[in-house]
Length: 303
Image 1 (cartoon, rainbow, N blue to C red):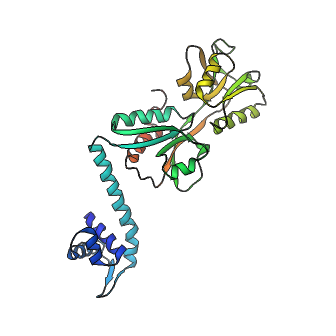
Image 2: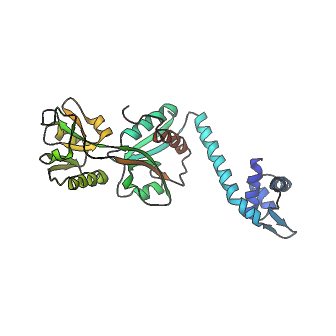
Image 3: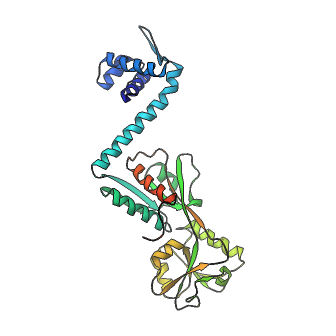
């Protein structure tokens, strides 16, 4: 099948006029008629009924039309992507993540950048109050977040990327400094330093649920709106914190210890989300890379 058969068919279906369809495509009317006729022969049906005055699309033509439009649009997008790949991957992506989504997007971006170094990638922190608007409006091409933050919207698509356990980070000079794992109930008498609910609502609520489940009420010494302040507090021995495991791997140093929680499942599922109508042609390239990690073809932890 020649793609022009579909292009000319779409033009005739939209205008119901062979002359106008020819004008739009800068070809002769006879060319349009011939290509449409060839398409009809290929399908073995009439797509239009013609008279001296009118052109009417048949039921078969109406059925074909949305598929023809989708096919032509997909091929045009593919052409744009191939051109960008040929030209060194020129383009731009905007990627947002919440404060705890670090390892997975970091790995995806590193892999993508190796393959398409010409693409400019803008990174920003996820606006937790305007997720739906920013995805559908394509302010973000992709965003990473805990699954329970994902809006329920038919215009948003997503993929489960991974599940991360929560871990405790404590000063090596504190009482947990030589421990590799602890029971969650051992935190009952500790001072907790947490990222604030306004910044990481799902992680904060998960921790509160665990405290209620274990019937413990440790002192929440402080909540922080940024990771740096949280790390300083833990390093100084002000208290301990609970954060996702991959985030801990980026934050621990010679003064702190990552401690596993041994007696409960603290796994938090994470997703990558995007608009179903995304128009950025390089987004498909990034999606392919991300899907490889999400399927487990690549290791997400550590760089």
